[in-house]
Length: 250
Picture 1 (cartoon, one colour):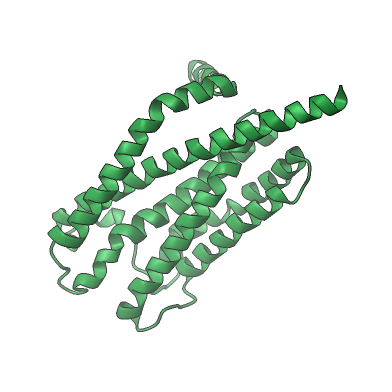
Picture 2 (picture 1 turned 90 degrees about the horizontal axis):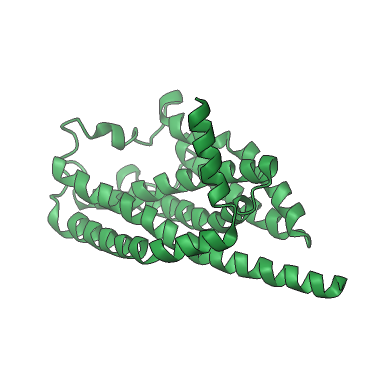
C-alpha cells in the first residue's frame, strides 16, 4: 500500500512542473490526434454503412454510436474535473485546477451532444422529443453543473478564488454522477438500461460492438487532444499574468 501511494505521489509530482508537462504533451499530442481521427472515422463508417439495421428499431438505432459514447464522455470528464478539483483544492497541485478548467467546456459539449442525440433517438422510439425521465433529467442537471462551473470559474478576477469556488461546486455536483449511472435501475424510466452491460446478450449483435468501442476510444483521444491544446493556452496565459504582476510589483 505504501509503495502504491509513493508511486501515485511521484506521478503527481512529475506533472506538477508545467514545463515538464508541456514536453510530455508535445510528444503524445500527434498520436492522440491520429487515434482520434482514425477511430471516429472508422466508427462512423462501420456504424452508418456496415453494421446491419436493428430488427426492432431499424436504422434509427444507429445514433447509438454517437449518443452512448458522448454520454460516457460526459460522465467521465466530470469525474476527472471532480478529482482534479480535489487535488487542486487539497494539495494545491499546480496543474490540477487548469486541467479541471480546461476540461469543463469539453465535457459540456459532450453532455449537449448526448442530450441532442438522445432527443433525436427518442422521437421515433417514444413519439416525443423530450420526457422528464430520470436519466434524461439528471443529464440535463449535469449540463447545468458544467455551465455553472464554467461561469463560476470565470466570475472572479483572481483565478485562484475562481478555481477554489468552482472546485467546491464540482465536488458537490459529483453526487449527480451515481444518480445518472443508476437512475435506470433505481426508478421506472423510459430510458433503456446501460448498453455496455448488454454486450454479452443476444439483443445486441456482435458486429455493433466494434463501432461503439471505436467511437469511445476516438472520443477519449479527442478529449485528450483538445485538453492538451487548452492546457497549453492556459499555461501560457498564467505565465503572462504572472509576468505582468511581477512587472507591476517591481
